[in-house]
Length: 371
Image (tube, rainbow, N blue to C red; front, side, top):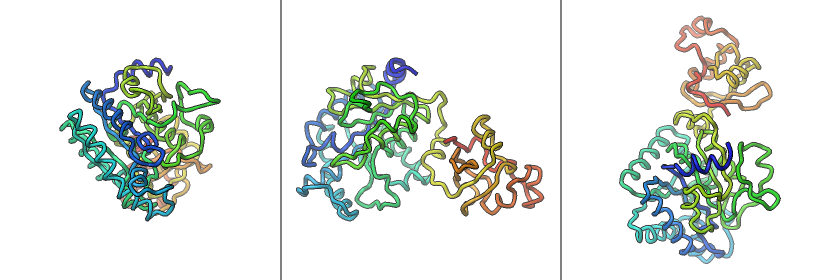
């Protein structure tokens, strides 16, 4: 899809957006909250809210703000020190947001999350319900990873991926990732539009990480890829560009836009494919892989060649082809032990092997998302 069409037909008409702002965009060189930058952001978001646009903000900066408050010369390296720094900084960050948005009559709410909150279906839905309720109260939700308590096993590591998950759970029309560069750069020039996030497009970005932040351009492109794969648009732009959000929503040519997939995924499929934790793996033959990928078919036991893991009925599992490439994820109708007994069999043979045949499919196509 051409850049102009995305900007004029999708971004300009977006009514529900998720904005992610990075640490370097709202903190100064020493790590302290940049009050002028936060004031500019608050002014723009307040204007969008007044125009009827639903906005959810994902904001990094707790560790950076903590560094400034504690006068630390550099970002801490150990997890306990990072957690302690975040604990100090989170309050400073929210106080700054509260004060600047209050000047525009906008109330704010803090929502701290970890990876577990998105991987667990019940908590995932609870996040969505909370954000929807805040929106009904005209209160701006500000999300951040709960760095003060999260350990490596339950951390995303940066807020770009959290922003993508939030955009998907809200079915937002647009994800805006604000950085301190003008967009995705190639040879010193901003790429106007990226049609697909793949190895080729990822190869042009820098792998370096900012001094205060935890992410990089690769992380932002991965996040954008998650959203566009679900059927929505994304853009990476410079937070320091004057009125960048307002101008983007007016259709101006700023930043790098990402073209959405033609087919929008349901909320359930978004969670299965991008948020749910996989409990095992199922390997399929070439025929089953083609049926799943090219024809959108359910996964039948006849095409299964191997099973890995100890998953239960209802768990999310990865579906791999013979080469070990993940081609799909889905919620299984059978446990690992049951799949081992029926793999390679026709659906009509399930009852004889298990003593019952509640489902013809191991994974129904309605409970499966292609990778």
